[in-house]
Image (cartoon, rainbow, N blue to C red; front, side):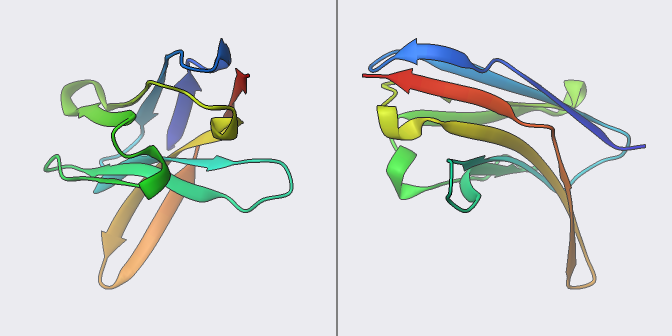
Amino acid sequence: QVQLVESGGGLVQAGGSLRLSCVASGRSFNGLGWYRQAPAKQRVLVASISVAGNSNYADSVKGRFTISRNNAKDTVYLQMDSLKPEDTATYYCNAYVADMGSRYDWWGQGTQVTVSS
């Protein structure tokens, strides 16, 4: 059974830092990543990283956020620095498998990040 367990959200002042962690268990994945969803907005990609370590970031977080993974621990991290109030959202861990042209996604329960001005 696949499980994604997130931790590390919280309340921080603008300019501060937070580190999110997600343990992904139950099978191996091609990619791991983080999405976020603000109230009344769609869920959007923040950052993703492949099993080979290739990473991808949303333009809005480039230079401020860093995604990394520890394959031995089945864990993906999101280091968030220079946080802004607009980063406030629920952050969801994502894991996916790509197979034969199809993609299969699993999601964590979400962790709240609130950045005060």
